[in-house]
Image 1 (cartoon, helix red, strand yellow):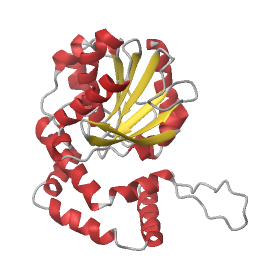
Image 2 (cartoon, helix red, strand yellow):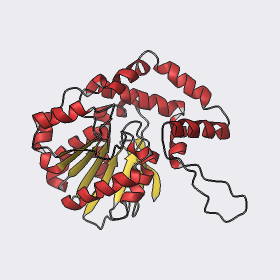
Image 3 (tube, helix red, strand yellow):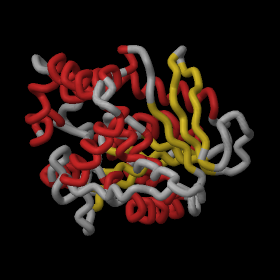
Image 4 (tube, one colour):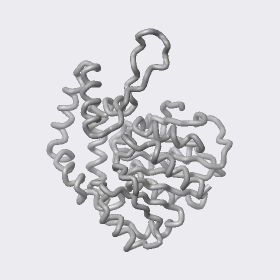
Length: 300
C-alpha cells in the first residue's frame, strides 16, 4: 500500500493505492476507485481496501484544501479531474461509494459509463432526503449555529497530550462497539511500542480543528442539497449499479429502500442480512470486502 499527495485542480489530494503508484502505467483492464463518505478520511477504509485487494486492484482517494471543494458538486468535479488526469481510456472503472460517496458515484457512472464501462457499488447510500433522516435531524444544530462551538471544543481537546487523547478516543470508539484491538508492533526489539489501530489514528486526525471544520461544512451542504431521490438517473443506469442498504441505518432508513423499489423496481437493491452498521469500516471491513469483491467479479 502506497500513499502520497497529488495536485488536482491546485488542491493537494491524499491518495492511497494498492498494486502500484498512480504514475505507473496501468496494465490491468479494471480499476477500482473508492469514494469515502463524510468525513472522507481514507484511513477508515484501509482494512476494507486491504481485504478487497486480495483479488482486485484498488485505489482510494480523499482530501483537499479549498472551501469550494467541500460541496457536493465540488467533490464530483474533483473526482472527475482526478480520473481524467490519471486513468487511461482503455480501463474499466469500478466505483465503490459509501454513504454520500454513493451519490457521487452515480454522477461518475453517468459520465464514464460509455468511455470506461463504469459500474458502481453503493454501500449504505445516502441518495435522498438526508436532512429528514434521524441522523440528519440530530446533526443539523451542530452544522448551523453551534458549528463554531464544536470546532473550538475540538481545538481544546486536540491540545491534550497524545497519549491521553489516544486513550480517550480508544475508549469512546470501543464504547460504540468498534473493533479496535491494538496492532502489535512488527519490531522484534524488546519493549517495542504497540501501533495504534488505524481507526483510532484516523479519528484523532478528525479532531484537528481544520479537518473537523471542513467535514462539518461539507455535511451542511449535503443536508441542504440531497433532497428527493433522482429516480431517473438510477433507472437509466440500473444495470450498472448495486445498492446495499442497512437494516438499522439512521442515515438511510429502510423506508428509503422501499421508496427506491417503488420508483425503480428494476434496481438491484439489497438489504444487508448481516446487521452491518452504516459505518461498516469500523467493524465489518473484511466481511464487506468479500461481498463487494463478488459483485466486481460479475461486472468484470
